[in-house]
Image (cartoon, rainbow, N blue to C red; front, side, top):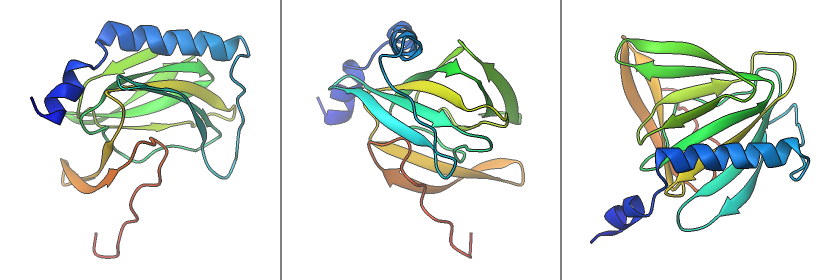
Length: 169
């Protein structure tokens, strides 16, 4: 077996991803994990890490968001703990905006491409689980109605800064 196969065999199922995000979301609501907000950049902290999954707590102030990305070979899930988020999801028909409200859980497989943003005035809080643990993210742009990969970043941090765009991109 190779390392990619090993990683996928130990990955959490969709049901387990859902259960993990909902469990950690309940812990955050109960005050077991303090949340901070930073208007300059998204605040985040890793709550758990092992060979099967990593769990992140993220706060989003007004207009904070990600860039269009996937999570490499990791599947995942996120639960909106508080507030509301807008997810721009890439589908065969293009980008579709989906409103995600408090308590909602989204589960996704490998190569799920999306951008998540807080367009509301109130700070949003979410819990994210990646399994196997995050090691790679790809960043995309839409050109002429097609999804185009523009960069990749080896990272274990879903909040790592995306590679800077150069003038010729």
